[in-house]
View 1 (tube, rainbow, N blue to C red):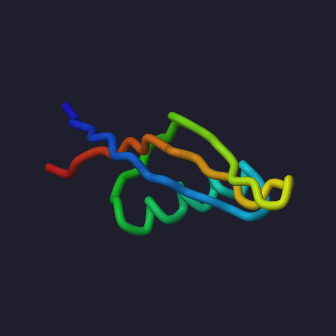
View 2: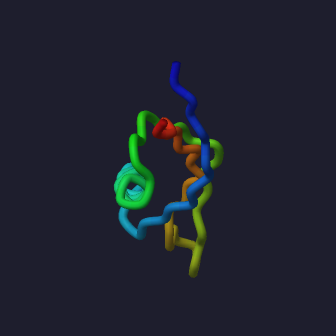
Length: 67
């Protein structure tokens, strides 16, 4: 039997939504062991002078707890 935990991660990128997701998952995997999945809980952008300034995601990251 395994037990998993879910934690929330907020990631951002000046480049794209895809880049923000990849950065968030990569960063989470550096700190959390056994990351098995992630899903997007929320997404938004910040706007400056009428243009998108930053892409942001709230990710829910799942990782399996060690025995």
